[in-house]
Image (spheres, rainbow, N blue to C red):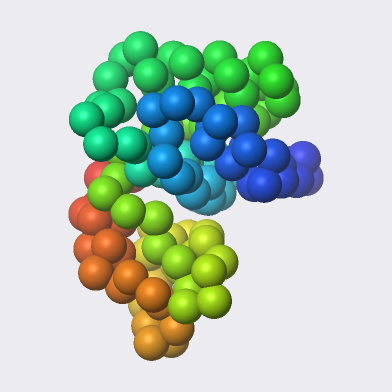
Length: 123
């Protein structure tokens, strides 16, 4: 078994960076191997280029551990939340697995999930 990575500690580190507005980390099973994917919503005018990608990876490696460094980082327009304000890690995990979502009425911003579906086709 792998080490359980707490997403809250990842969010604390990533969202402390000036370019990042919000983030979501999920585990993605690829060929029987779990890898972490990180989705970042950036502040206006910011883009996820090689420099910011490196900054995020270095911050996580240095402040947490090499195990906290994601396999891939994707820039997204929005992070999905429940109506009660919780990040929807499970919904994004299900989308990446190609599974359907049960209760979309509980999602505050369901329109943002289409972007995750497009990313799921590539991972």
